[in-house]
Structure formats: C-alpha cells, structure tokens
Amino acid sequence: MPSPTETPASFYAGLRYEDADAGIAWLESVLGAERHELFRDDAGKVVHGELIFGGAILMLSSAGIGREPFRSLPAGQQLIYCAIEDPDALHERAVAAGAEVAFGLTDTDYGSRDFTLRDPEGNLWSFGTYRPTA
Image (cartoon, rainbow, N blue to C red; front, side, top):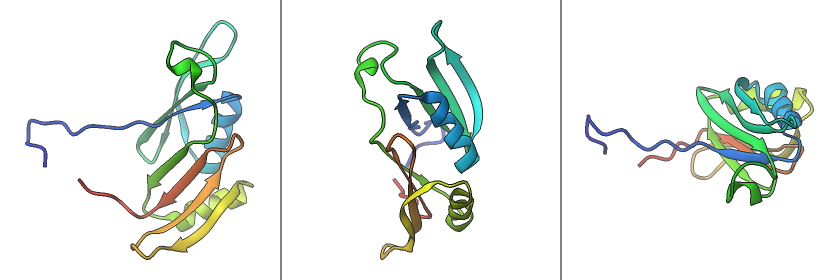
C-alpha cells in the first residue's frame, strides 16, 4: 500500500490506428468517450490524441508515424479492459450504436459482469465490474 507521500503508478492505454479519425469517431459514438487533446502532423495524421472515458484517459495515434520504437507498432489487435459500474447500460448503448459484440454480457465465476466489443480495426474492448486490487 502506498504511503501518504507516495503516488501510485498510473497506466494509460495507447493504441495505434490505421485510420485514427475513424477510431476516434467509434470511441465517441459507441462508448461516449470525449475528445480531450488532438495533435496532427503536417500530413494530417494523428500524432497524439487523448479521449476521456469514465474519468480515464485513453491515448491513441495514427500507425506508422512518430519516433521509434512506437512507429513500428502495428495497428489493431490489442486488448483493453476497463472496469465500470454499469456494464449493462454501456452494452445497451454500444449495441444501439451498431458496435460489433465479440462476447455478450455474462456473469463470470469470479464475480464480474462483463462483455467485449471489437472496434473497426480489430481491437478488443472488454468492460466489466471486476476491479483488481494491488
């Protein structure tokens, strides 16, 4: 457990998209994420973007740009898990927005209620009530 003067580590997901603008649009329309920061290069590619979802920050960029070793990372095929209070409401919103449900709402044997979506570039987005503790 951290001492009162210690700040716990923070992790931020960082995704690469072939079409970062389409990824941003999906995150906004399906999840209700809000655009926070967006920086582009001279060619219009997203060098750094930040969206806020449930108080957390998700970072993303266009694939194939930036400095190494990040430029070499492929787009898509990542897994993000996000602990939320009401997976049923988010699932309903996502289905209404036309999202691809990769794994439907379920109650797990370890006490979580969760589901998984697949975004247009193949990233898996899992949402559930399970909150690991350190």
